[in-house]
Image (cartoon, rainbow, N blue to C red; front, side, top):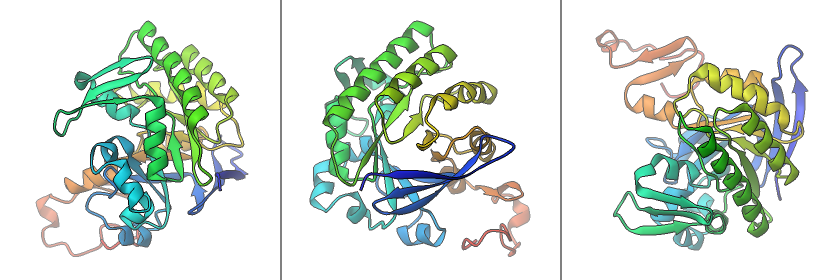
Length: 308
């Protein structure tokens, strides 16, 4: 089945809404945060632990899985769900952000991206069609169109070219994507230029994707500017389809996104911070490496049902 989305309730005070996202691997209640399993595993956690925490959907990075162990091997294993023994829903990104983050190793043109592997230096080329091939082989519930993410700050001409290329790539992705149990989301780009964001969003909506992501934010711009871009972008996206803010995971930023009508979020921040001793609790951030916690056997958060 392709995904279906229903808005259950709208806030009377903000643009926040409660929804249900129906996927082949279960119904997801939104707003939802997706932990990141970069290489088919959420670092330091097992699938069973994620289930115990009522995690509904996770994100995996197709760029990393393409390089190692390879999308064809995962397809031979029965797809990403069987490969990692995860019964819930999965979203795979297209690799666009990873290409952006490895800027010194890549070359971008209208056909796609040439890059050297960060693992062994081997040369690769990924086009929109290749990005779809990889994600269809992985078999996640939601795939993302291939996009070009620009840095902050960046000149308007550079951002405009990237936004136009993202739109053309989205059309190519939609043309070749198929899969009864996988849906393809488009990604809005346009940097921190409101007019480019609005234009890109409206053009993507005309392509009629089942969901839309807002990419290219949380890349170094001030939080206040990110919220301004959300204010002008979200209203351009359909009310009856899910909206996904990519790469945002700080609690305050999630709340700001929710009040603006965003339904989905992902980020490595919670697990990365936890591995380094910084924990999010209902009463704020806690640094567990502080000496005062050495002999403290109380729960980290009485309001949380997790193991700690």
